[in-house]
Image 1 (tube, rainbow, N blue to C red):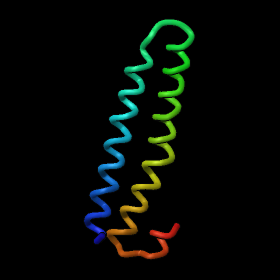
Image 2 (image 1 turned 90 degrees about the vertical axis):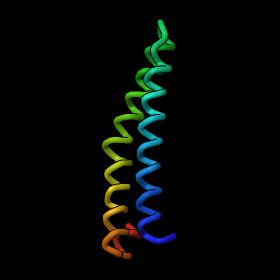
Image 3 (image 1 turned 60 degrees about the vertical axis):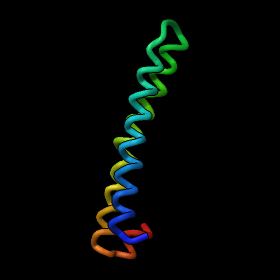
Image 4 (image 1 turned 135 degrees about the vertical axis):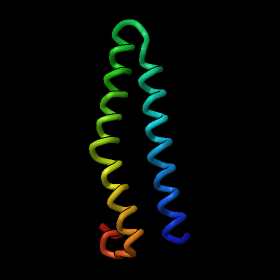
Length: 74
């Protein structure tokens, strides 16, 4: 896989993960304790996605574009 294809694949992963998060938030809109728990889970997942996973994937994309083997391995 060339770096352009890998960058595109990473973009797809980010997009699909965000779509899945939106679906989780929507699915959590039920009443009662179960609904609140589902919403908390979805919001925690969204936070981890935005604050941890996406930044790491963005660094990986940058390393791939720059053909930086150390950045790719990090």
